[in-house]
Figure 1 (cartoon, rainbow, N blue to C red):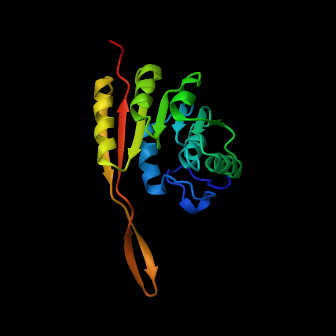
Figure 2 (figure 1 turned 135 degrees about the vertical axis):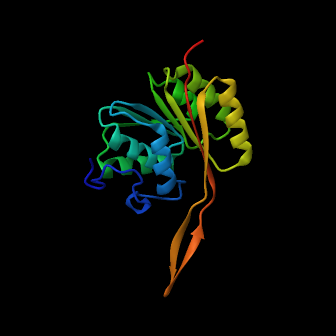
Figure 3 (figure 1 turned 60 degrees about the horizontal axis):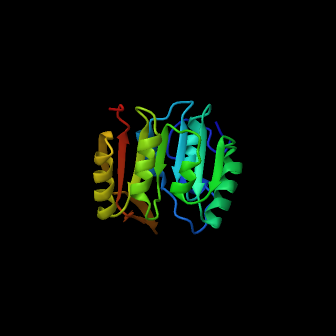
Length: 200
């Protein structure tokens, strides 16, 4: 529970986060991502390409007996994660400065992984997740391009992930224009979730 967000529901409003020019997973998308991660109170999440830390913050407020590894290599983003961590009192977040694949290899253990940004390392990140996740551990990733959607699906199937699911979100939000309200469309986004199967 956080004074900044004293609720148990997902989808912290975007305006509650300290933001710069760093990309952020928007609140409606984040709510679906969180539901697909299926966190327990003691879950350990690796958040790769954490950006402003919005997913890390949401996860930290729910996995209160667990731990969040927030992985990011851009200096501006790391500073924003630090600020948001303090603002929400999310003390169970450990910020790791580094590129996704290399940083992920250094984490002792995790049972959930969210890939919000892969920066060309998508296949390697899925391989590491396949090697490191425990049985029934969960992977969730987002992509805005059809090419990355295709590559992610192919890689997950090749690595033996189970219960692979794709949700395509097309969100429009009301924007006031005087006495009228127009629906402004956001970019469509694909949310892919999967579960680590039993070892053969």
